[in-house]
Length: 442
Ligand code: ADP
Image 1 (cartoon, rainbow, N blue to C red):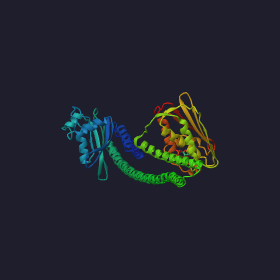
Image 2: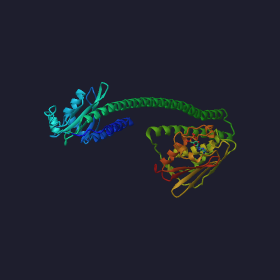
Image 3: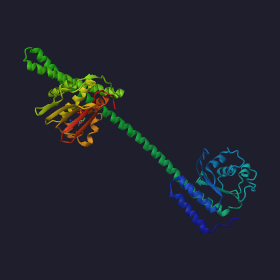
Image 4: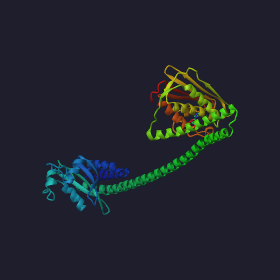
């Protein structure tokens, strides 16, 4: 027989256990620490705490000492056909059913259990098992045993286990309630999050629709302007067949420039639609002399609505600039975009310069202006789709944020590159290099 523990150590252990139980709302931690302390206190060989759902008999929580959790599960499920199951189901089931504690000094010799095969097979000697009860509800049980020694547990141990079980049951119930509360709170937060996301999506859609409408308005306006001016010049020419030659030529040039402007905008829209639908553009490459194309693009800027008396245009292109193999319309579009930006973003005027030089592998085209400039941290961003510098100067100038995005796509489609050098208030230079033979994106 084991000796009765002295009352001081009994109470202090109970206190320690009680503190463990109430120190955390993490159920797993509570159970594991508790079973370690109980086993140590009653000098058991093994032990476990089992939490069983009253209605369904489903095990929903456990902590073991000296027994593999898996082996315990197998033994209790009855699936264990091995000659030596780890635990006797009979004792566990009896405590769950009767809700009465069980203590035996030697179950193998105990008339209550001896004839049960599971007790024999599990070779249970000393055993104590108490139910975990909260008022009328059973939460499971605490079990300790020894398969080596007899008479390990006495009445004091049983009392200690029962007192512990009472406290444990309350702590477990609290942890479970807390767990349920947390789960339902999490569920609620998730729902709220979903609702919030739906609302954000709805707002984003509304914003996209608003932008689309604004964009259509802007594009119609941009197309209508050159069309109106073309119509006006054509009507004037038709009504005045005897106009002086110089004036008539100027009218024709204006018509050509306005038509180019419309074409550029339409191309921009078509390219951006193709890009977003197919992810790439195609080239129609053939040998081209860039000189006339560059001069024509520069000339057309005089008819831009942003051109002022303070603007001047310098074209610096050598006569003998070699031909390159490229898509003429697309290179025209690249140069027009850069030139029209140069004029547009220098509202006070200043010199706009278009330069072209041949190197050993490529032709370098540069467009510079003396306008508002671009902060260094925006140099990458402006090449992204729909991105514009967000400041008051830029906002007061109309634009879609598409031009440079498409310009870069078109340059890269030729296997070339584009860079920018600029500072706020300083000169801005865009440099494009186009290989002699369009080689596709690098
Ligand atoms: P946008 O239609 O707005 O002109 P772009 O894609 O052509 O679109 O240009 C993107 C942005 O880059 C412009 O909104 C402007 O902020 C800036 N930007 C482009 N070119 C210049 C320039 N020459 N000088 C100053 N800022 C420029």
